[in-house]
Amino acid sequence: MALYKKPDFWSLKAQKEGYPARSIYKLKEIDEKFTFFASSRNQGGQRILDLGAAPGSWSLYVLRRYGSQPLCLTAIDLLTLSRRFDGGLFDREDFFFIQGDFTSEAVRAELENRGPYTALISDAAPGTTGTRTVDTLRSLALAEEALGYAKRCLSPGGNMVIKVFQGGDTAALLKEMRTCFNSVKSFKPAACRDNSFETYYIGLGKK
Ligand SMILES: C[S@@+](CC[C@H](N)C(=O)[O-])C[C@H]1O[C@@H](n2cnc3c(N)ncnc32)[C@H](O)[C@@H]1O
Image 1 (spheres, protein in one colour):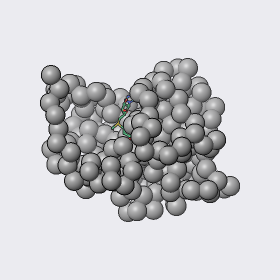
Image 2 (cartoon, protein in one colour):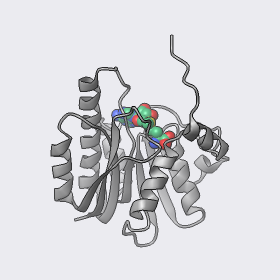
Image 3 (cartoon, protein in one colour):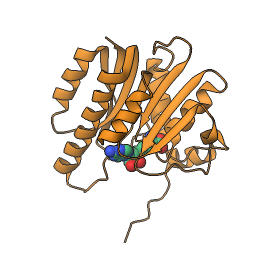
Image 4 (cartoon, helix red, strand yellow):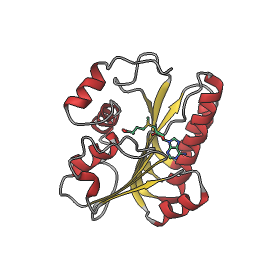
C-alpha cells in the first residue's frame, strides 16, 4: 500500500501558484541564481528541450516565463502531463510533447531533428527502488543520456541543467561536463527535500 505523504510547504505553494509539482521552485531558483535562460545564447528566440517533463512544472515555468516571446519548447516523458494547472498552455503551437523514452533510438532521432536547442533542462529521475546504489546508477545513466543530447544538439553558448542522485561516479560526469561547457556548477536548490540525495549539475556556455 502506498504511504500517504502530507503536502509540505513547497508542494502547497506550488498548488497555490498553479503548478503540479514543487520542482518548479528548483528550476526557478536555478534560473535566478545562474541567469540560466537569459544567459543561454539565442538568436531569434529560445528553443528548449525538457527531458523528464511530467507532470509539467518545468515546462509550465518556461511557457509562463516567455509569455508571448518567441519560444519553441519540446518536452518528453514516459508519463503524461498533468492538465490541472496549464490553462491551455500545453495546447500552444510553440509547445510540443512526446510521450516516450528519451533513451530509445526512435525518440532520440525525433528529438534531435527538432533541435538544435538553445537550452536543455533535465529533471529526469528513475523510479526509485530504495536501494541507493541501484537508484544512483540509474540516475547517472539518465544524466549521461541527457549530456549526450547536449553534446549532439545543444547550440554553442547554450546552457544545460541535469538532475543527479549523489553517489556513484558523479565525479566522472562532472569531469565530462567540464569538457563541454565553459563553466560547470553543482547546486542543491532550497526546494529539494531535506532527506533527498538529489542535486543539479549546471553547465553554462557550451563550447
Ligand atoms: C521528478 S519527475 C520530473 C518533474 C518535472 N520536471 C516537473 O517539473 O513536473 C522525473 C520524471 O522523469 C521521467 N523519466 C524517467 N526516465 C525517463 C525516460 N527514460 N524517458 C522519459 N522520461 C523519463 C519520469 O517519468 C518522471 O516523470
